[in-house]
Length: 490
Ligand code: SF4
Image 1: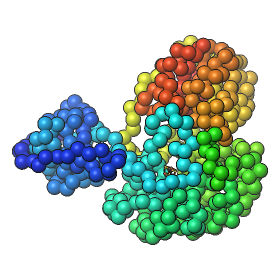
Image 2: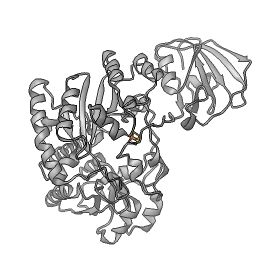
Image 3: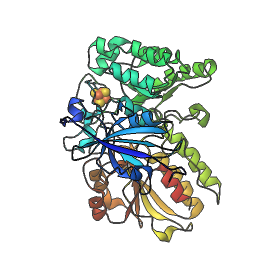
Image 4: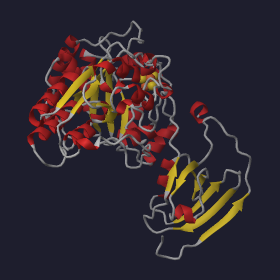
């Protein structure tokens, strides 16, 4: 509550009829942002705001979403809200607040803007028809790029969006470049060269000190070899404003049947590592950073040792799967070396790319780990992971068993749902887990947490987590790598 006598003036405004439209399709949005929660005893409650009220203006300026709300209220102590009630009535509320005083309001999530590309390798084309609907969302949204680190191509960004990035300092932005050669980029995105050409937009962002993390989805025989070298050199020439580039291999499921695409092989990975290593050395010498980071899958598939901790610096692309294995190995190594200490942290923490302003979905409640394991007793269970990470995790767990007398097993689960080259843990589905259920040993099973939707207990193939639990021979726990390390540290 404020330490000063607050004055609140509320009056009704005369309103026009408001058309409701479907935002994701038309991109015409009802003005305002909807309140979803009001914290008890907060300023929001004092203003008599309620869930489903829409704040349509702040100090006379229109509000499009909660980012606008944050931007327009930041640092303001004298405020006027125009609030549309669910009845259609619009109130003008004038009030003051203490500096930095929180409103105690939660807002609706941003509805993503859709992309207008037809990428050769689009993940949507690799989904089975019955995959979870959210897997078909083709988001291309500079707000989500800023808030959650989602990549955009900038190919259909509007002037308004460009201005917004600059005006509201929505930095960094995460940009899928793929190739700086225009023809190649247009070919990969499946659009006209004029649309694929982002040179001016890119330059304008850099001129306005917006930082960019770039990404290349590497497609053999299209943007590899000399093309990749050109792309990385072009991007590195903008360092430090272009902070880093992730090079991740295209992953084709059995549903990607486009014959313009070539699958990634171990030989391709080995050659790419050799070629990019030369550039990385050069960048470390000239820029002081590795700058171009190859995705972990490239090393794993090529059978090449994962680079050292120093290679990754502060892990700028860890949420794009780059450096995750090195970070895990180092954390596990510390776990094995120490007896009783704080659980070792993984690089960057959980939300390294997620901005502090981002609304984080409320996690559903999962079952707590069995109390019998509290206090460091020996563990007897099965850890499920993808075929790519299985051998590495298996080695670590074997060392852990030796040290603690535990009987943990690692089971590499084949991905039969997506099939093709997909062997990462994060794309395992309910059906994949059920297919190996008879191989589970011990008292419990652990599955990778990110195979379950973050805000709903549902797996990628639409199976509910409860259904999977009911069909499993032992209790299942969902843990991310941080959680696993923490669990094993007990
Ligand atoms: S930008 Fe390309 S890969 Fe991303 S959603 Fe659009 S079409 Fe798919």
